[in-house]
Image (cartoon, rainbow, N blue to C red; front, side):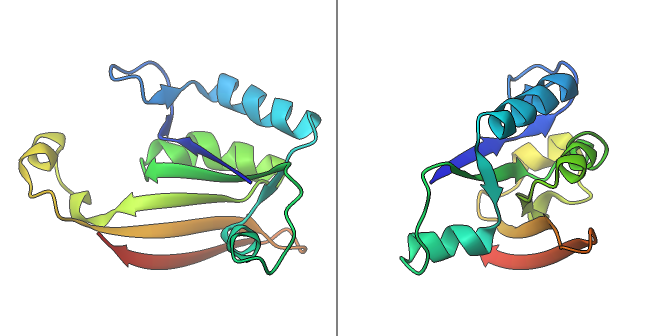
Length: 132
């Protein structure tokens, strides 16, 4: 199995942890056209635990840090393609300015937010909490 991780889907920013929306969509389309199948965290964990056989062409898609731009740029592209994804949130930074983030302690609470499509085309969201 493969894990494909992104940070931001947005226009140019310094720092290099972003991809433009059009390129992101082309990357998703190319992977689908190449025969890869995107799986949710349940399928990933089942294969990892040996409860399900993996095909070698499965991808768990993740986003680190839960940037707000994902709502406008990545989520619509994923929903249109019925691609599930995990968004890892750093809850200790919520509501803080960028400057305050760099002066805060390194121990933070994080969360995992799952975006998936059900057979009835209804978005399901299942939050999970983790500590670091």
